[in-house]
Image 1 (tube, rainbow, N blue to C red):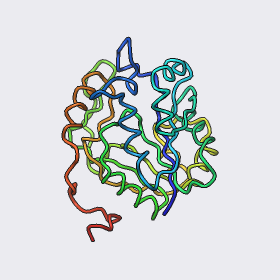
Image 2: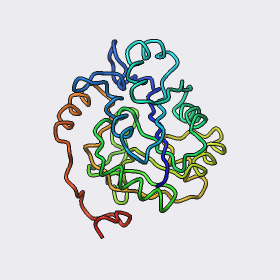
Image 3: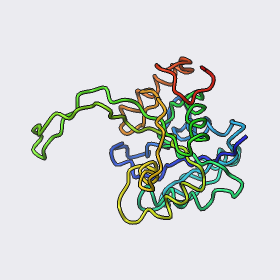
Amino acid sequence: MPRYAVILAAAGKSSRFRDANYKKPFAPLDNRAVWLHSAERFVNRDDVKQVVLVISPEDKDHFYSKFGANVAILGIDVVEGGAERTDSVQKALERVRDDIDLIAVHDAARPCLADEWVDRVFAAAEKTGAAMLAIPVAGTLKRVAPDYTIVETVSREGLWEAQTPQVFRRELLLKAYAQRGKEPSTDDAQLVERLGHKVMVVPGSPINLKITTKEDLQIAAYLLKAMPKPKTLGPVHPFDERFR
């Protein structure tokens, strides 16, 4: 069985969350912090041997005073992040154990994650070296000018919205970060794409919501009540062995 490490990214500024008391990963959701919902999707898996949570240095004291016991019980590693998301993941990669085969990076603010989706993206990554959850773009897309007028309507054909977890062979992700340079990137898959390595898209679900605003937190509370999810999500993915 391949051995996985999971990096949970929770070091962002949460500027759009607009809460004086909480950053979004630490906000209460169904009687537990958002990040705990995400962590618990992985810590009980037999194939996950290490979970690394990345937090902002400015949150360290408050985090340990509130969640120190949870960290000890769950047996996770906590790392202080950097200025940008890629800096934070880079710091987490430095803590990944040498015996790990594949690394998954997941937004700590995506608490509504089903085991089935994790199974699928893990299986795809084992076969291809790089895989991520995503969903097809469903709405009409408009490119908008700074004055809020429409510049053009953008075709959604072939467009997918990226989700997490994004999963990679250890050596591939380490190489991608070693060669990331100064060009900005918004997710880990983009760094792997720059190496010329294909990243397999695995169908996820709109339920795998990333909490960005307080309204999203309210939606997530309802989505959690809908768990567990249906066993199938549209067409069978070619790397889902169980439905062959």
